[in-house]
Image (cartoon, rainbow, N blue to C red; front, side):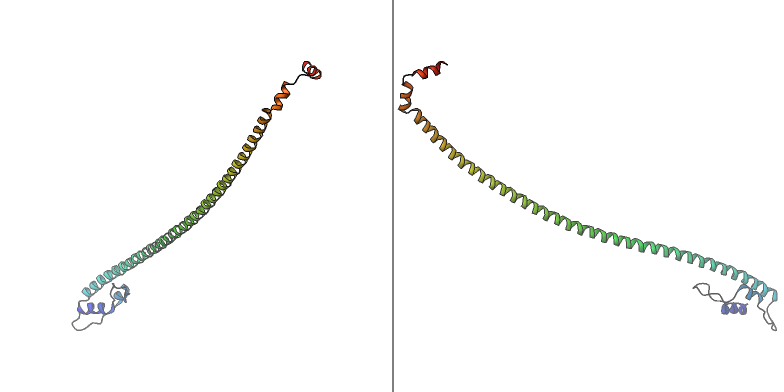
Length: 186
């Protein structure tokens, strides 16, 4: 039996580690051994070889199934790695976009503030200009009112002087003429 085990070990590769098997179950089945003078029992050797063939066939099938599973798992891993990479890229893009939006918002707010300050300065300057203009107009109107008052006062005083004049009194006391009496009676 040692001879067969050594033969199988020397001609078969290990299943684990991804190394391909060298012998097929058919190779083991068709192997012919030479007979020696006190050789092994042929029936026992054949039974053992049949058992090796079955086990070897099972091992090959299991190896194929495991290779399929490994391939499927590798595909899934690759799929998830791709998803992870895509998500990471998306996160980076989202972060960059958020930073750009923040920067743009800051710039825009600064521009709005500057524009508001300019508008406020303009409005204040316009208001000051209008208030100065109104103050000047008020001063002009006050001067005109003083002049008008002075002139009116002078006119009224002149009229009062005329009314209080003795000539006016004399005129009112003068006798009526015929012409005047006709005018009054009509």
